[in-house]
Length: 493
Image (cartoon, rainbow, N blue to C red):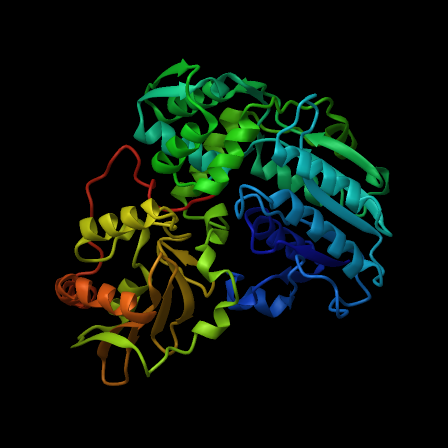
């Protein structure tokens, strides 16, 4: 089949893509920015990538006519706290317009469980999108899921952060809300199972694991699986806004997503039936099994995707292609260079930078900078890196984005997504004479930008000098093993 995959660079889309390719399907990935699609060169050769912003009204026919099936996996919950429902409705309307002139027979939409009488804004939006998509010229299959459990999913990462960082928790009363989590492996199995399955056309199905748990149960079972105990006390006085700030500063989530999640966590998310499990003969995994599977993947470094990959600073929500050419004029730079004896090893050191490996020098200062960025609403260091030693264009890397990762040319180029009064690049390259060049480039925005640069020059002197030296000589500084050896990196089930 020829399949349209929207949201291909999202958490679910990145998990679904290799499964579709392995099954022999031809896949067209529809993304807002092709430069953010983090896949290796081999995968790029197998897919067709089309840039479409479904928020924009349809002016041109961008999709091939001979499509058979489409996955609708796009949403805006992490980008706004006020009008994300309007954006999601607009995207669904524009999607219908884009596909009306194609041969698409089936559209598969991953929605949320909407069985409670009172719905949050998030769940109401998902249900509204279902209604809009049902008006399209195709057969609609809706899969309604609750909490998705897999390392790299937003819900799992929040649970992990809370448990690993806070053995004693004073929590809001929404931790007593019931939910029915599902393993990411089962979500993918359902998504692929309904593909072309006519018995699922024009129907909605709840998909969930076998366990009905409160959020408190999930936190305690996670702690038990990790071999420690936590103490959780609930209080009735924590407002939604205070709860959101609590999640924001303790966990890896953004404030906008935290606020929307808290709004949804007050609503019970429990499946009505298991019809689809019987139709597809799928037996979902328990919550404990989902946790165990996640950590098996963590230990093997089998990382595919993380919800954090799509989390960017709102200032840079356009294509990164315009930033790949580092400017030469009107910029301020810090240049360092050093001859290296073992360029192959140095290149490996460069490719391991960030995340759990740290930044080779002054890691505490990097953490402080990340915390300050988070205080101002930036991404901070919470995104980590997807894989401990592999990098691809489009990857998030702490508060940087990978623009170029070319091992043949021995060049890595990063673009800053932190809050700055300007634009910043960090580049590493080993030339033909085995000289390592490390260049930090800053294009200031007015006087404020220049004042910022000169205020941090003293720190740059020590940090960048120490960084290039350690990259060239030592490599990552090994840390003592802790009870949570992977808490900085983004890992996935």
